[in-house]
Length: 298
Image 1 (cartoon, rainbow, N blue to C red):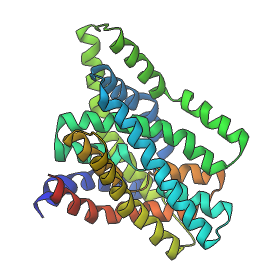
Image 2: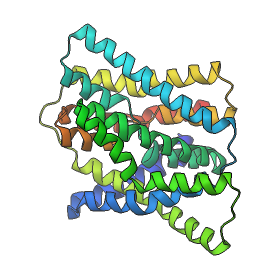
Image 3: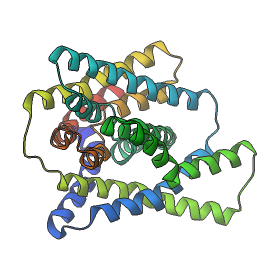
């Protein structure tokens, strides 16, 4: 109960504020999300990459992101083959299970539970996950050649991509920015996290579905909240991963489905009801699963 009250409840409370605000005022979530994506997240990502001492940790973050991605895709494709799902069903399930809410949810949980050093790892994980989701998420939502090119274009349309490039360049060239610039970056980055959390609550308030496919929702929830943490735990056991980073991987792998995938599913008509259902159910159930998981990790 202590973990729930000290770590999970404060995060859920911020989500609830966004949820309640959206139900009350019915605001334009796309505009709020755009402000977050195009203004504040680039500062948060720049801060993380500019200050990061790159060594084996970053390459390990990239590797584990891809392991989690392809493990989920393989597992989902096996279920698709066994159940004789059509391409649309398979794509909807992959969208529901392959991408986690590493930013709005995972990063604040890790900050509250493990501290500032782990939070830096969480932001780097989020940045890599965002790029992967923009490419593979759009691909599986569309499943077409033109749209895959659009996915690549979407990555380079995101300001966070250029924030990463700029931060990496300054980092590797050992160029020190003026203290006032650093203060401005830190100021803007500090706004990103609470805003992301409020926007997630607003996005959850807008989720709706007409058909609730119980079997697929249960399966997607098990893959997302049970099997993926197990895959992450196996990675931590088998790979030379520092203890703190390993905990970050396990927590991030335990996150519910990313709300962004719902937008992809709506845009490309890739089973949006199914994707929305899994997103909502995994987000609600993660309150319990994360509380239990954190008892063992902290």
